[in-house]
Length: 562
Image (tube, rainbow, N blue to C red; front, side, top):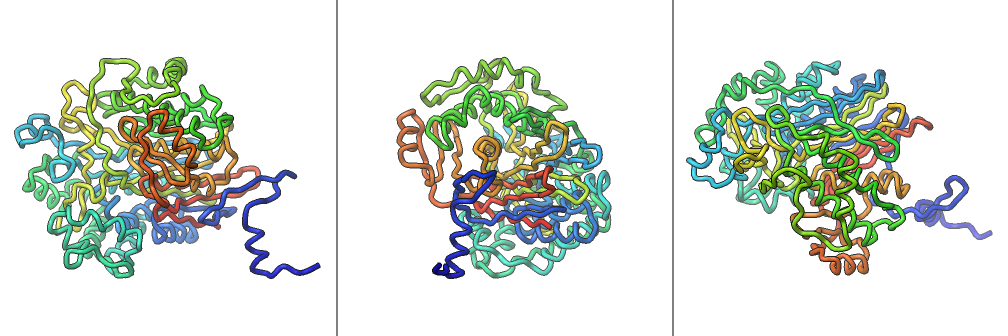
């Protein structure tokens, strides 16, 4: 028999078909090789952060140690998306007890933050940038509280890699340059001095350094989180924000605390899906999945027009309830029992017809129209599963690209604009008030089997797209039997306001035409656009003892496993 050249053999062996369970299955081509291991795995939104988390695990640290280390590195190497000046949420799985806990480290509005404060400052709505959009940043409190509760290393040890990258610099990637290019002109002077050279973003391959941030991290390493929450760093930030027209004072920093809560859960394909309670939008994922169960989605065909239309219309119904009710649970608790009631959601699903619906109202309660600011999905994600089966699913954000667009020059901290998630609408649960947490798009997720064994950590950046990307990937994985990396890379949609619908151009042409005929206003996107998120996954095959990861090529996500 004529021998096949070795290179051709490799290409054939890795292409479209494989044998599985004595039957042939066609695999979609993927950009990334699936990374798998048998002991532990890490995924994050930057290769340097992933490498740092992997090193922590290899040196004997646990999932929480690795997560905080990666979170701190991401605060340096993805500076326009997250940082000391932003917030964080975490989901934690205990490998021994099988318990799932949630950590909420979202900051609050200042004591001066009344609606009158904004009206007297000349705002008809809360601004999307500038000091008046800044709430207390909570990420550092999340780092410290995680290590206090579950860690085996000190905060100083966890911050070492981040300090090094801030001090010595790290190379600007093509992705980072692409992200910087359209936005650096919006920064204040300190921000432009930091992130540009001669008015242009730092070139690809050149190093980005932030010595002021390195010193800030050192101070936190030496003094602990109180350096920010009432100490020298907090004093600098509070004075700066006040001088810039914001509502934060040093007492607001002193009052901040991250806190532990219980997750809320729903059923998906016989599994237990865990998400964050409000002020996160986690309930929106649960309501979307519950409504989706009213339809035989697999029989519609993957990414068919009927399939996509149904998911988009489900999203609109879920978001109408979300925008009406999700707010600070301590001051304005959402009626979760009503929003997640099975009968109610079945009735909501029955409202879906064959045509796109532009104006969707909440299912109960007086309609209170209030625009919920999207930011633009600039957030980072990370996840870890360690050798003992402990896991962390973590999201960290400054909300919009470059947050408030304001860098405090002495500390090197870019401040988030999470306050723009509030509304000034009178009577709305999410109306801004002193000491209140805003509505958050941040929503980490985990999945366990019926016996409570961890099966999946799942998350993505992407603002309002987070729950949309997750439901697509979950169905790819469990309904359409895709492998993890394949499930993440499959073409996606993003439903925007009204009937605006963004599609990746890998969606078939006839499907696009059908969607247009149904009334969807399509926005086509070339390539692998970051607007569709950056989904990460660690899938635990408990039967075979294998951890299978997926990292989205739409952003800078990378995974490692051993």
